[in-house]
Image (cartoon, rainbow, N blue to C red; front, side):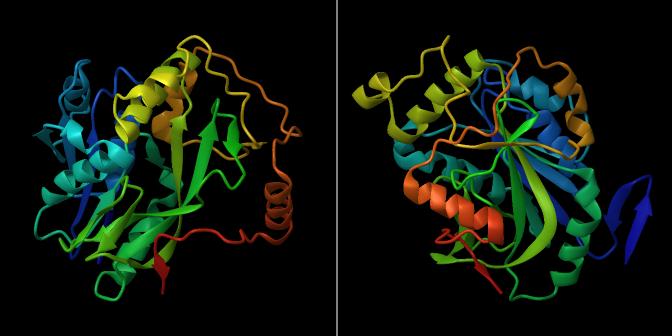
Length: 303
């Protein structure tokens, strides 16, 4: 049974725990407040693992002011940077704090936001499959914004789906660089949910984006010679260097509106301009006409 009270979705028989991790959200302008706020109505608790920061991230999380939020401190192991492994480790740390009596764990990254229009579909899917042990996770569609809040990536560069709700089974762990999950080494068995995750990781002023990209590169490769040689010039990040974009025609989540109004840079793009190899051009043409993405990697198994 589900009770609807003041637009909050509370299940009498089901407990949902949200979880995420974050470090230096202020410095790199992550929309982490909106991320957390967007899942609060769907969760009974939200675990936030905060790494050592130099910019007031902890205070930012505390400012949300929800009694549902449980903050834990984490010390990042910088020796695990190869291949982005450190991101999976931090995801698992946050997941470990999820209450044992939770049925589902709702994972969200610091640059992802759920739209309130999808709350009913998400809650319905969690309720429907709660007692079906074969379903180990729920699969979300993705919308990736790029350059500004007006453009979305529409090429094979961007992943279409990812698991964001998992069963509270500690045999499940984050995979590789935290973009998926595995259970004792195998892909999770999942059901698609009619909901989207809005990804804003490529929307911020160009200078901050350059700083964030340099930091991200170091997370994957460490501070080695390759990192130094591939640094993005702080004053010269070019959003125009992209293979394909489309105009966003939907609405943004309510929790993003204030952030969008505060945007302090401009970006425009000719969406007719495409930068594809012949192979990618052909695959793009097929996808746009059939709706099918050929040879797409799936880090999950739909059942």
